[in-house]
Image (tube, rainbow, N blue to C red):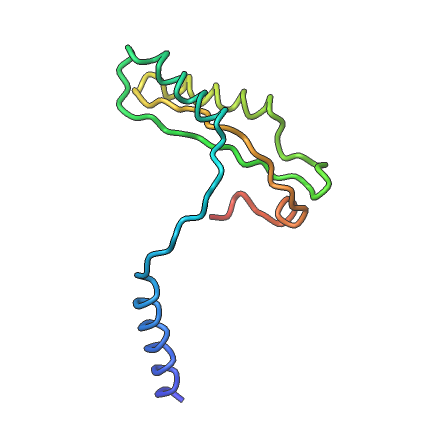
Length: 117
């Protein structure tokens, strides 16, 4: 039994190493041009400000399949984003809001535990 287990683990490890190193083609992912332009404008407005780091933030909000039970409204996201910007601005860490999208999945909305990483 030990030999079979070791053989299976060895084969799995070997396959993981071989197939894990192959390159995969990127698909054509649509870019949210409005969010991109907003980030560019943000950068231009603060061109004279010394910034050590710029973090692009994307908000993904869960809601049910039919669009109900939204985890956060756009206003709540904006309030949290502004609070984050104000708290970290003295450190030279800046944030750019790159956009918000909604994930329509009742399963994720009720079964995702945000406290578990």
